[in-house]
Every structure is written in structure tokens, then in C-alpha cells.
Image (cartoon, rainbow, N blue to C red; front, side, top):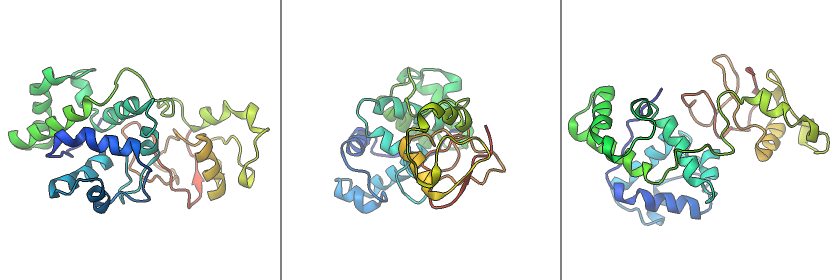
Amino acid sequence: MALTNAYVLPTNRIGDILGKIRDGQAPERFTQQLLKDWGFSSTNDRAFIGLLKALGFLTPDGKPTQRYNDYRDHSRSRVVLGEALRDAYGDIFLIKEHPSPADRASITGKFKSFHNVSDHVAGLMTKTFLGLLQHADLSGKASVAPTEEVIAGKRLSSRSASSSRRAAPGGAGPRRAGTVLTAASCMWLRRTRDFIGVQCGVNSTTKCDTPHSPNNRCYGFACTTRFDLTQG
């Protein structure tokens, strides 16, 4: 499982920044200057970038991921955030499937023991988690975030019937595991969301924009290279 150590001090502004993400256009890169343009000018606000990376909204170099764009859909933003919390704070959900502020003591204890931090820092991590939790829906799954079992081979093969009617660059169509995709094909699959949910193996040459999530799903593919779907 996983348990991020990212936290922010202005937890009262978590809702504000999530609102900016939902309502605005995804930037080419999420920077400190963008935070300032949004009204987050305090040095403490810079920690939001690290938090968004931990949630899988941004790549390590600050580029918005597919999850970032999925969150911008108001109709499912809460569910998308719920899945992000399960990925980033997996160990918390081992304590309680549906944690709440009433579980603050046990959550703080988990942060303290897992990261070997002081009570104060563990409290800040807990406050950040609970601040995010109130904006999330843990009851369902986002339609674009398949379960671990719904990996590329299964996901793509289910669309084989309709693929013959769709033109794609480089002859892209349903792809089985082991298929090497060109950049053009990858871009097409990304647009049609056939490429979401690819499970990366240890020896896979698939390149992810973000680190693997605990269930080995990849979000936000870098479509500038070739991809080898090695598992399925």
C-alpha cells in the first residue's frame, strides 16, 4: 500500500485550489507562478504542488496528468479525488474503509509511526488528509479509472467490434499486451481513452508521466516514445 507524507499548512484553502482546477483550463505545467495568478501567493501555498503530485494530478515535473483532466469534469470530480486518496493514502484505508474526522487519533498515529515524525507533523498530515476527504466521494469509482483487473488487454479487446469503424493514425486499433505502439497510435488511444488503465510490469518499456500507483496503474502517458504493453 502507500501513505504519502505530503501536507499543506493552509488546509482551509484546499477547497479553493480544487475549485480552481475544476473550473480552469489545464496548464501546460503547474508552476508557482500559476499559484500566484490564482491568488495563492504565500510561500506556504507552494506545498500544494507537492500534494497534487502525491495525488497523481501532476507528473514529477509538474505537468497535468489524465487524472487532473478527469477531475475537471464536475459530474465525477469527487469520485476522481476519492480514487486519488485511495492511491496516495492506501494504508489509512486499511484502518478504516471509510475514514472520518472521528478517526483522527488513529490516522495521526499511523502517520507518526509510518513516517517516524513528531506529533505535530503527523497532525499536519492528518489535517491535510481530512481536508481532502471532505471534497471526495469514496463510495464509487470513476468511469475512466478501471480496476486493476481491467488492464489494457481486456479493456482494448472489448472495443474490437467498433474499432473497425474508426480510423486511427498509424493503424491504431485495439491492442493486445505485447504490442508496441508508435507515438501517433498512443496519442489516438489516449484521446479515445483506450490507453487508460494499462498495467505496467517491472520489465515493461511503457513510460509513465507519473510514478506507478500502488495498484500499478499508470496515469498520463508520455506519448513521445514507443510503448510496449507487456502485461495483460
